[in-house]
Length: 342
Image 1 (cartoon, rainbow, N blue to C red):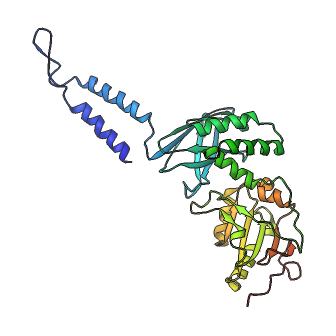
Image 2: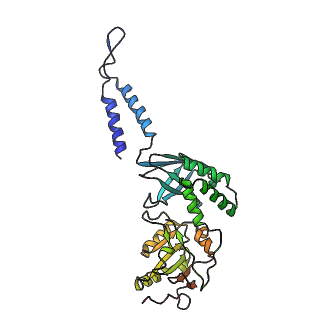
Image 3: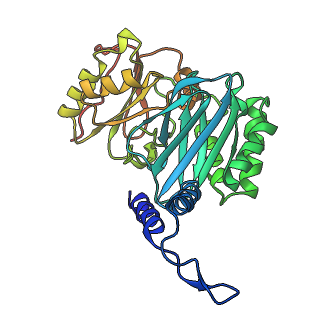
């Protein structure tokens, strides 16, 4: 990086440049000529250590120290588009140090071996620090800026609160901190985590669906069904790579979209927690339609909202979001596409 190139130039300038002459108390010349090499090298090294302890203004640094978690591969992604892909964080001897280019405010998510996630708020030039215990990952403390410190305080204060109580506290927090990074993030969680269970039934209305980015594609925007359902019928599929009955579904979806590209849209929600398996299936099946995988299995907010208890589940709704069919197999009579638009 340019930052590190400039540091190297400064180091060699310090090492090779003689110190200026100056007069001593008796008028003699002192300090001139070439300063002893060890002294100059020591000065250069000291300055380098000072500079390297700072984070360049065009990147973010996230480091962590853990007890009872000595070695693991963590994963990190951004739900705000700061990264185009998932990256691996190598935690060794209870520590990790990760850096990534960053030009604007971002939200990162660190995924731990037990598939729990920790959100991190970051700005360019910041050094965010995590401190925790592998036996209690929900109690991780995060510092480095006000947003992380306030969110950590909120999390720890409501660590054991029931879901309904937690949501109520979140709403109160958002009212008082609507414009902060953590307040905006909490509002997103409130939107995703509807506490009222929606019952899906044939003939009923498919509720609006709001799907934030899942971190697999930096170009994703938040998807809202209400913004697209008036133009096209909807094919909503819940699936998982670990469920054999899900295999082959994407072929049928792709075929239906090819035949009905003008009046049909597809939305896939994966319950996978194995990111490798999910990405492999997306590549193999050439998925180009709206798809999300939040790596939360049955805890995925929309899965809980709709009360999904089995996968695969295929839901067809018309342009008015009226549910035409609900089924577990792509068979005539169980899953019926609406008639083509004239």
